[in-house]
Image (tube, rainbow, N blue to C red):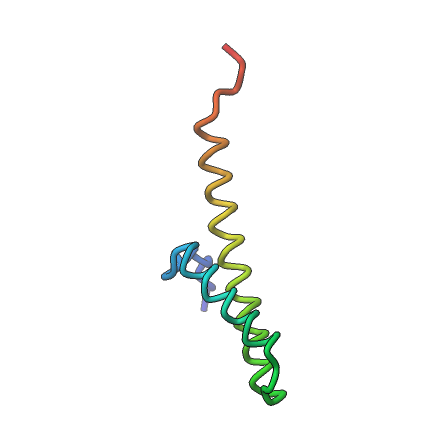
Length: 73
């Protein structure tokens, strides 16, 4: 069986949605009172959200770089 190349999957959350959810995760972790399992699950979700935010920022940076004049005419 041949392996299929991985295709980039478009995120289902906008940058703003992911950032807001990440801020909520941080607030909940800082508030404490969670079990170890709950804390670990929140931490993992926070990592996913941070990666998603970075994805959106990288794409925005790429678009800006593509639109910027190169200075070579």
